[in-house]
Length: 133
Ligand SMILES: [Zn+2]
Image (cartoon, rainbow, N blue to C red; front, top):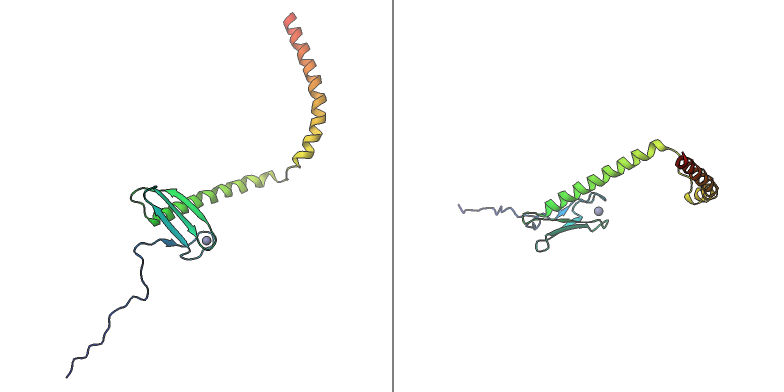
């Protein structure tokens, strides 16, 4: 009987990169569209999404890897999202939109001019009386 061995070597379907440098985009949610670049000399890591064009840059240290830059990005986005949440929450109670600044300022300018002069005169009198006594 001849030995017949079936060649059953597992062949990887795709070439694997050494380090994971592509991630899912937080903005457009495309898997693997975010690519991280690390500049160890400048100690700067940046990433950009080739789909929606998001760009982020952060400081890194000697031990930082692509995933650290990505994690930093998530933190930064989280902080921005929370800020926006607070801003929207703060805006809600005030309700009414502000009046256009140019119109209200022009109206104020006229009234304030007259009021201010009257106020000044009264103030001066008061001071004089105080001094006399
Ligand atoms: Zn994107």
